[in-house]
Length: 144
Image 1: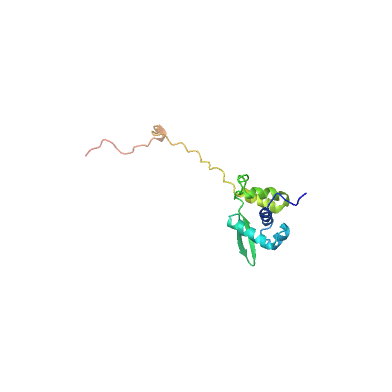
Image 2 (image 1 turned 60 degrees about the vertical axis):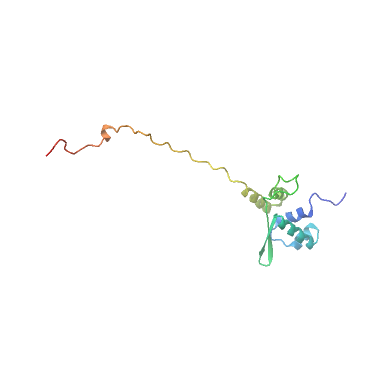
């Protein structure tokens, strides 16, 4: 049996960075089984394609994966990176749970439900009852 895998080195690097966003590329290279230079090229390519953001924190880099981005091949373009990572990391524990929560946060908000309009009063109010009728206290009919 050959030594092939279902994922390319790009997929392996992405999974490593998803497991630990503060990892060193040297450690990713050791885990994937490729050179550190190859990992640097993959990270650069992923960054250029919009799958990854790299930010500096002190002397270390932090890697943030764009989980909304669709996979590149036509056969998988209906699936996002976040869904793929959630599936792969499902048994990896709390960090995988956080990855799944990130995916859930990015889902569209629920539809807005407008409140029902209040009934407007009738155009012609009913005649006030005798008890509520105003009393005219002016004297009538006196002329000077």
